Image (cartoon, rainbow, N blue to C red; front, top):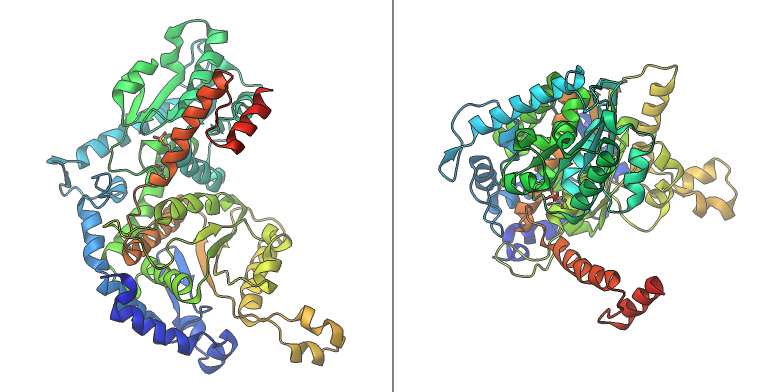
Length: 534
Ligand code: G6Q
């Protein structure tokens, strides 16, 4: 049955008509306890969702819809290892990477737990050797520059987490990332580095992604230009991949390869071998803490009743705004500079997972699916784009993420940062009326310009402090939110066919450029090719 034909959907439509004009000012006025009633915590993460445009009836109705969409069996199927990524015939088991359970988990007739454990141990020995300086480069020097070459899911997670956990990282290790096929990226990431002290981590699930392979080849040439001996590759290159043959063909010793499996999606892979750069930066103990944090949220998601389930609540609120209020975007606004890449990470997480317009059965949907996700850290965003959220014409639900205890205690910074977070969510919810402005003596001609209509929904997420453990919980929270929404929208959140066409066309166009031809197949592409070739 099409989602919009479900009686539960129709019921929500009717309910929306009764809620759409209610103002958060009135909802708070009529329920003085609202701020503590609409709140939930899971270990280190506290969620206040009281500033959402919901009444006591809204979430129960959304929960009924979720049950009608078989959310609970779908969740069980994912954790059990069913091949829920149907278009690629794959299981979706990133949760197994951080599970401490030793109960067999069978994929294609094999228990996957021992291999996960073995890989983690292999990563641990290698990361320890790099960190303590016993892994030596060709000239006998320890490797203090670590460059991860990867893109998309093989880049964004390590970048985001190593930035988030910078305070936990070993400071004499320099970490760099090369993702873009643009030479500028490679040149700047390696500028001034001594090849004799540089380790390249080639991170690619398929080991065939053009950007990564091109950068890896350039890295090889860069190293050999100084080292002049193919044998040094073994000391300066490691691979993170599922493809042993391709890694070997590139010249990397399989002994220096860290494996993962086809049931780990790229954008869900940071707790697999793809996290090697993270482990080198923060150390194996902190990496295990990160995994433990993930597991806490995984277990909460797997076992908590829907009504008390944080990822489910956040997901359903997202559905409420996307599908009933017609919101097209969602902002993620971390009030912690260390989380500055968190919005970008979940931009991919959301948009690649739920940017789909056909159902699992291949039928066109007649409702909105994944929203446009974006964001920047507060308070920078306040001086940039918050104007539009406050007074523009779009409805933009936003998640504000703060930390209660700061990592760097410096003067009044943290109190001021927190004050800004709380002030913004308050201003967005309650606004400022024309009457209030007039009473304050604002000139009549300025009243409409200075009015804040408010009623902008926000979630406030507070971490007790930013630690590997709390970060793991936060990431898993958003991962499972995406999963829940995919189930409601009846789409496959785990494939990404939409990235393919551009890749194929780029190969053709590259041939044109390489052979100095300008046959673009359409007049715009042909003309643009001429601009380059002339
Ligand atoms: C993520 C996507 C995508 C992928 C990159 C890199 O879910 O599949 O972002 O991670 O295209 O792919 P490789 O790791 O195979 O190089």
